[in-house]
Image 1 (cartoon, helix red, strand yellow):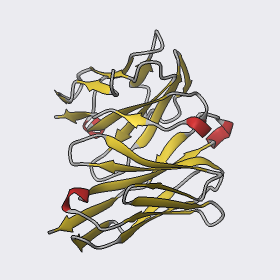
Image 2 (cartoon, chains in turn red, yellow; image 1 turned 180 degrees about the horizontal axis):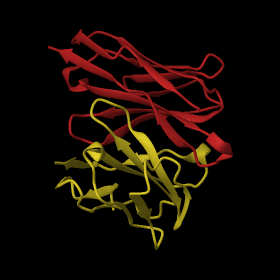
Image 3 (cartoon, chains in turn brown, orange; image 1 turned 90 degrees about the vertical axis):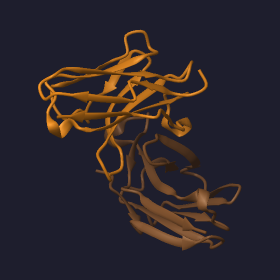
Image 4 (cartoon, one colour; image 1 turned 45 degrees about the vertical axis):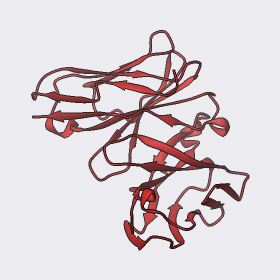
Length: 116
Length: 116
């Protein structure tokens, strides 16, 4: 059974800092790994998707890496801004039970606060 | 439509009542997923549809939970005889393909269910 863990559970940083969020997963047989952002009372916004054959993806100030062999992914946020404050979730898309459609297994999230 | 929509956004039910939650996926998306998110936790998989076929219902917590997608577009999640432990945010996601390798999932805003 796939299990996903995120560290730290919460992070508070001053504006302008670069930061790293960590995600680990127990089953390396994944199709892809997605990072999401969730604002209070809202749904999930997809940030980056890394295919299992890829090592990293970049979008603006965000960079996500994937190391399947060690079961780890990191989300790097450069030059953080107060508007980045949210909960960040990683999710692994697994072929659990031999399925091909990839249901997501989520971590519990990292609550990020960027203060001015 | 432009994105995944869900209704109602908020639902308060008395214990024992039946509720129905609606999801309108992105037009043309083959795959539709339902997830349940308890307070402070990451979402957990409930069920998966590929077009009108329900291929996986392994995450449904009890036989009080029932989902359908009769015409392969709109989906309804029904909970019978609601209990307090059913209180959660119910998220719907859709993706273009039925194959996980292409499956970036797009989420709706969720329905927050409170059972009194």
